[in-house]
Length: 345
Ligand SMILES: NC(=O)c1ccc[n+]([C@@H]2O[C@H](COP(=O)([O-])OP(=O)(O)OC[C@H]3O[C@@H](n4cnc5c(N)ncnc54)[C@H](O)[C@@H]3O)[C@@H](O)[C@H]2O)c1
Image (cartoon, rainbow, N blue to C red; front, side, top):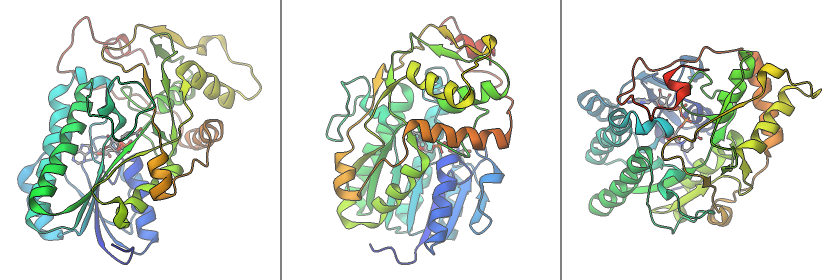
């Protein structure tokens, strides 16, 4: 498949990563369609040059109707409930928005004879195996979100084998940057830290802060998911995408505070506080990226300090956001993290 002009559908098109993808695919001259139910994304993110429809992929009939009408050739699936830590407290919502919504999309795509699915999965499928994670390691998720992503991956492989469509699976990690939802108190650690500071509130660290992650600036993600979609070599493959340099949460905190207060004067009330680790939180999670380097020409170009600075610049322009909590969690008990139960941020 060469990058000529295709009819492309992006789900989650009003979201953070989906909206950047829409912009780049439009710049390449494709006919771009987007859907999103706006549960976690914003109309402000939607590129007016794309054909955008508000659609909840949990609605099987409407999704089927839409796919039969648009008949996309290539689909990038990014719509999701991406609240990994919360998924132990909202397992039904997570499964419906991830696994079930994906089936509602994939089945009519197969029936209308689409060409290729680019599935955005997650590093959560590796669970608590020893990092760095390699694509050939087995799927053994440790949380409900990871289970839904692993099921989506496996179902894609099975249905592709039976029905003959092409696919690529992408496993990004901790992507951050402009347009990320800062109002969500359940996910996006960098966005939460920055939004707390904009709100003149301290933020909270679950555990001792020594858990390690790698963080990808959005500009080091979008080009590679696009490249993966258009090269033959990537078909039927899984790719980790993201930098290999890992940081502890405590190190991340230092980077965020240094960028937010470049003169080093951090107000006392904004010093972060520690809380018990969340249930099922994987301690160390980062991956190797050599497969993407070889096949997709992946290169990390924006380090954490530079990326956080850019994100803070954008966030200051956007201004402080009010954190938006769910009306109720599906399971609320003594295991529920305090920041959610008491709405601490
Ligand atoms: N950001 C990260 O760090 C990261 C890391 C690994 C994987 N991912 C995956 O990448 C994808 C994009 O993540 P993001 O960070 O841009 O999140 P996001 O929340 O900004 O985007 C997801 C979009 O999906 C939409 N959506 C949710 N449920 C829907 C439904 N039922 N029907 C239609 N639209 C629906 C939301 O409104 C939102 O706009 C997700 O699949 C996520 O699991 C993200």
